[in-house]
Length: 100
Image (cartoon, rainbow, N blue to C red):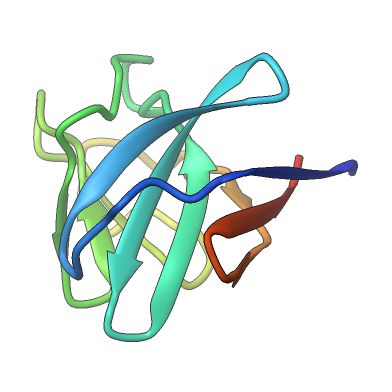
């Protein structure tokens, strides 16, 4: 993995946003437990996770409703058994460090 730093977009708790990180699209989510970074494509059918809903400690694909744990990426729905790839990340002021 490579550590990459990007400008942290304004992101309220319970929201998600797509960021371009090292030439790849990454979904960022903010929960009460902090920031989370993950693959921007849903492993269910490879649709974009842009507009994903964040609830408690999970994220839901806006297309078919596949839901994934923000702790380890595992599927929480019956739509797929594939996990969502998560990237370790940490906010440092207005910069986000992500291990891609």
